[in-house]
Image 1 (cartoon, rainbow, N blue to C red):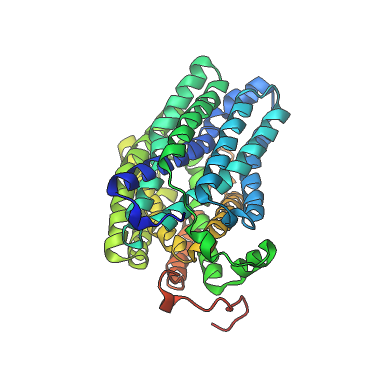
Image 2: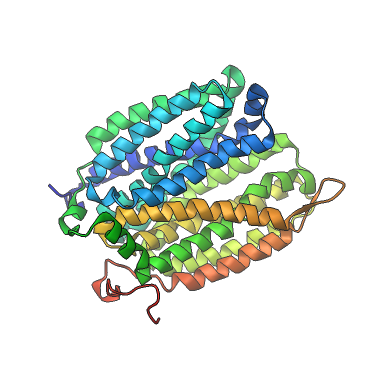
Length: 419
């Protein structure tokens, strides 16, 4: 029987969000814990930095490719069953990572993990869109997205402690064990979500996929989200090296950046969610994105300053760059009809993966290193991120809610339709 969001009591809705946030926490933890393990993995497997980069990127490209393929079928099943099956595969793939005896095996295991993790994250947001009413969806998105802050604040330090004390395998064993517990809880807590199946239609998966990609409102959302990823991930990957070689921090100072920034966003994500519900998605996004431009410019042009001053800048950077994602995701999730939401979010997840990779690569082409080891042109990267943020504000005004029938373009509107 289809699950109607109105049948959920506040307590059941709270437990639903707890489970979804826990699933998203382990998914994000799996991704963020790998990068600090680089020195250990390069030493244990005797690999180069480029080979370690392959371990990291194998997840991203796998998630992006499988996300597009999965978009053709993900809306044809109960979302609860889909999420639990994907999560079980995610847990098993983490176990394979923990047991990896060689570099090649670990790369293969990361490919499998990305295949499950990419669609799984998209399904989480699809469930939020299906079950949580639009009037409370901003706060719900803030709750689920706070899992990234928790992964940064608690997950990474704990994972690194376990890895340094007992070996690099242990964080992956920890993730596999935690996933097993959450999987069991999710089986009993998550409701059956089949409402989207009632309006699925009889179109072939490929035809439905093409229709999804060629709908004007969907195209606007995809372009908007691609620009969002570029505005963030052109700057984020190079924060740590810039702080060390240009600002003068030590490597031991870096955890303070992520701890304070993550701790702050654990609270501000929910606050931005409430603002989204109160003032509207587009208005909240425009204000938060505008405020985010200041710390972006300051951070990418930061001279040598005391640690406390650096932490103020980096914390505000994390607050506003992560904060703008809350109304953005609420906006994008509402831009598609429920019957297509799973496929749409799967494609959206793939676009996020590819766009973040392109952003990092493009910024790397702009940056240079002096003979003294300092980075140059980071300010240019920051200016480009600000310009893209302005573009995001403009693009956000073109996204319409599919939950307001009067605001939704006809399904026959396609890519080359006159705007």
